[in-house]
Length: 460
Ligand code: ADP
Ligand code: MG
Image (tube, rainbow, N blue to C red; front, top):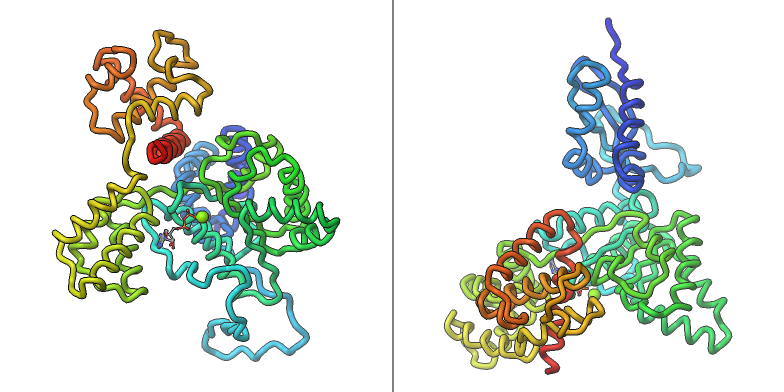
């Protein structure tokens, strides 16, 4: 019988791939692959989790298969084996006798532990609706909760307000809490971390502070964008990070923007945050939004018709928090008038919701000022004649955002931007669209600027 061993080709393929992809990609996705065996038509590779398998399949399967074909002259299909989770260290007790039938391993039901300290019991994976907008992040979070400290460390979740960052972060903590014994889970917002740190210095108790954070098994820090300009806290977190990383303890962070967009933060800390896996959350599409609201309505015993739920989801596309707020508002109104809410009435209620200050007063002027400030320019420069790159790109971005969030026509926008022609505006929008396709972080910058614009508008 012929034995097939393509290990050499596998090793060589990996070497070549290492030269072709970025260091981070290689460390992230290739270093943990292990050759298992091969047959006449396939090659089996072991991966640490099913999440990992799906990602590698989707991103790299073709590349790997092509490499192996080039090297070995045979077309082999790539197949994956998921590594079984590590078993806990064997105890002194005798192993249970194997019976003939394959038994699933006993489910360890933890002694009723009560809720995890410092975490909300509502933030669980069960309560989190998964859709295209958050699937990658949700799967990563779930994988982490099953194997903290091993595969994706650290993990950074970023996305705009109200998109579920805190929910996912705390779900990891809650899941680890119920499945592991003697585990120290520390959840903190970056703001509280900062305040505690400052207080510990004032009270001469930094050792207590260090002790708390450097001995966590799972450290979850929410909203790290808050650390902008907080130099001493950044320094402290840097050391906390290193201690935990060396001890292979899991860390997960959230941020409302990509780390590269957090200003005034040391490079080495930025570096640490993005050393592992970075995932993002986007606003939900219609179907997911409907599923989220239906779940929410069920959980909280709110009775509204499917039509009303659809209406809310059509009208509110910003984020999940706003969706929930709209639902609550309509439910409260229904209770007040003590009857079911028709679509018409809901529409009227939502109208009020929209005329809340946050959605209003977004003028071209506010957009120009917001975008200009972001790029350290003046609004006049955006409207001016200069066409250097430092001005041209922010100007295009501001035009694009104006087009997105106001009703202005291309002609109007051109006029507002120093009397330019509508074709210039069209060109700017196309430019940004195509740049978005090659630079995935651009969308986040745009969303951030839109949020800032709306906030600025509400104060105007
Ligand atoms: P963020 O921290 O990103 O600002 P949160 O985690 O506080 O957002 O989420 C805002 C609200 O939306 C919370 O009540 C949360 O439970 C809910 N939420 C967000 N995403 C989902 C989802 N996919 N499924 C269910 N609820 C969600
Ligand atoms: Mg949050």
